[in-house]
Length: 283
Image 1 (cartoon, one colour):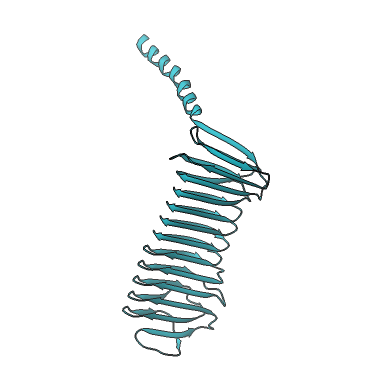
Image 2 (tube, rainbow, N blue to C red):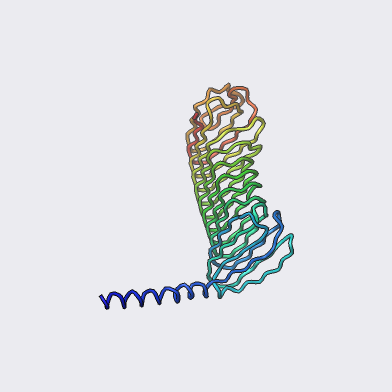
């Protein structure tokens, strides 16, 4: 019994020292910023996670050895860090605009009220909920986006693009990766291009909208509501074309090109693939 009691006392005495060590390794700084202020983040390497809160403040939490260079006013704040590897957690006002630049690191942003602009050379990007559009660009990494109001601009050289619940125009571009866009709506313009990846596009066309989908050596699948109205042009050189919609055919028609109108027309849908299959299907 005495042995057990002694062990317990030793464990209890160790707990405060462990917590103290964790606290000593943490750097936390807070700055005043307008609710709709601008936040600029520049990091060489590491992981970045940005969340919003109901305070007119920016708080950054990272390792104590991180070297932070901060310049700020109440309208904007610029934070840069040169530590080789670290995790950075930031809280920004709920309507603030966000711009992130990093050379090698992944970025995750959630519930951003202002415009979002994220650029990284090597790393994944994830944006979950943005109320004023988002632009995400990476050279080597995947892009994931969901629940965005406003225009979405997505580009990666080597990686896949996944987006859903986009309420606005979309531009998505990748050289060697698949692109999947789910549940898009209210898009005046959609432009999607992949050199060597498959493309899947599921959503609703806007009357008068312009939609251009192109893949050099990948398959293309477009799924639309059964009552959709649009003008269609599909073209492939070494693939097949399959369309579930009844078309009033027009112009040049052969095994490589199909043109026609379904319903009342309106939206213009252009789909092309050099050596892949094309399918336009009903939902």
